[in-house]
Image (cartoon, rainbow over all chains, first blue to last red; front, side, top):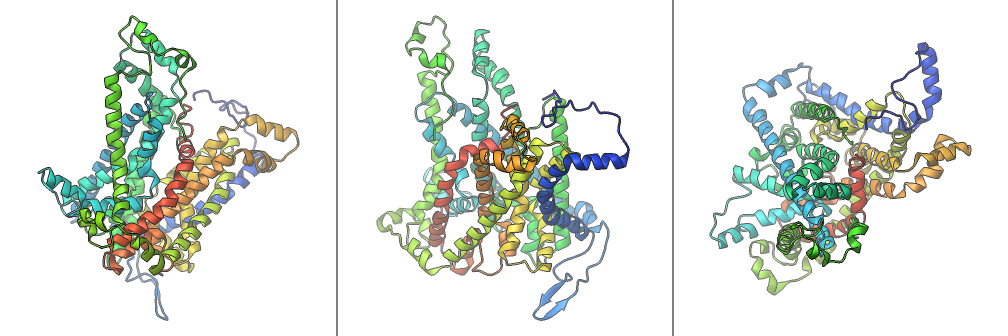
Length: 334
Length: 304
């Protein structure tokens, strides 16, 4: 990773000839790279039209007071022009330090962080544990693997309905707890248990991906390293600590980043598990959706402002994460 | 579908009883003590049951004829029936939803893969000014929360008269599928030796000719994975489909499933049956490609 020889050109990166004039450079660059640009043009176009333009437009919306009552719309044959106006950064100010900022933003923000941290830690911990078990020589491990991957194989919107049946008041989980003489929480009504249930279901859904990725990482570790470690008298824990974990580092850094991004933006599970019935269990993504589409009047501007804040949080996180990895002389794989 | 670790040659050739001869108390690498093996099996069996149970439970409930049977699962044993399935297939919009889902998912797949393949190739093989920025943009696009794009996309689609149309939804899904598939394809192209391109160039093919005639045929497994990923993303997406599709005949399956709650007065038995009907083909397909999917997801990660 540290040798910067360019695979495509065979040249060492960094040694540049003296730069010619701008016009010539543009012409040269065009001749040399036109096919590369031609090949990425479709993606650039797609991203430009359906991502960057909406993003720019969305950012503009956050600076207005648009909602479903003053946006352009058609009622029957009458077309009503948009009447929303530019209000600057008021939306952001309102969200971040307005009067109801704690109830509307910060409580969801804290819960989102807890949710992301808890879910990713559980995904990674359980996934690593299972991957280690599956990496042993065991009878029937192919079978275990196929069963353990099931939560990933079935579409989320299907499994979440399965969980709703199980978590319902008189569903199988509470019947089982009751049978064992344990308390039966109201999983889908009480706000603490809602959060608990959300994390539980998401953990169930997310472990297989981690497990399979980490298993791939484990299998790519050179077995002679273990032999050498054993020869030097390393205990099982030392082998795990000094051979397995470093060997998994680059896979881990990738899957943890993907896990954080996906969990942070996990819409389907909370939305499908609770609908609009759980104001306290809404993470920022579902909360923003609720503001923009789940209530009347629809607060377009505020919802978009939440979206911008979410994106900003993720970008900041990813930048720091990359920097932190690079400090350890470790390139991010994706 | 077997796991891909092979025992190292040395270990495979070693007779099993040799370890008793070894004076050291440690065991050969990869061998587990009987107790350890029992624990491993125990944990794995429990984990498997946890993984299996919610799905199995859903299948079981879908066989109960009454909408409240999920509260009295014991009663289902005596009156198991496939009535729910026949009702869903005959009396609901299931086939309309299936059609919408298939149109949208396949549309996303075709567009997504075509576009992603060329991009993946470009970023895998060529270094051009703006390369790093471009990769960064692709990464950032993957982290767009639904809420960022939902509102402006809604406005833009309604301006373009694309609300409640398949094309609108396909375009929206491409925005999530394409950047990801481009990453995936880049990872796959990286594993194809660069010498093949050079050979093609020496024989007088243009860069695009090399791509179309030499690399694409070699990259078929990667293309399959990208196709599958786009398909699954589009098939399982909920938020955009809920918001942008208004006509209940154009609902995708993910949205249609929710409509049982309000429309048919929470007929959960029918919901369960529909859920199972949806899950079977997708899961079967998933098992065929899951291994490649992981390799694609963490491409580069395992190579260090």
